[in-house]
Length: 171
Image (tube, rainbow, N blue to C red; front, side, top):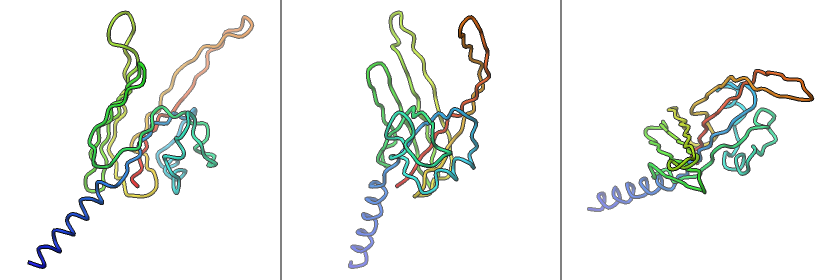
């Protein structure tokens, strides 16, 4: 009987500790091409919640400066899905954390799906190992585009490349 009580207490402690963990998720857009290895090295020892506590990345690490925070959330690791709405913007987050691996999907929606306004949606998703501690890149999307700028009757087309990184940290 004593052993059963001890086992039940151990199971309760393990269950409570898995739900007490926090999962930080962020989507950051960088104005230049990045690699997973480079970003993971720059993120080592950093706090994702502190880096993404503003519209731009807040850090002294040169490789992380200049990023635009598109989405940031701190969620209990036991909550499989959340939805956040602010004005005409919405963020839907679904994730599964199993055996040290995270599968996550974040959908960012803007606008209203009724009337004359347009509704746009972008989905970021990925699966990667996520040990507790430093933030890790879950997925990376590099987008090449052309932008047109006009200054004093001069028209110029520039090639731009941005990197969108889906990053998570289990703490």
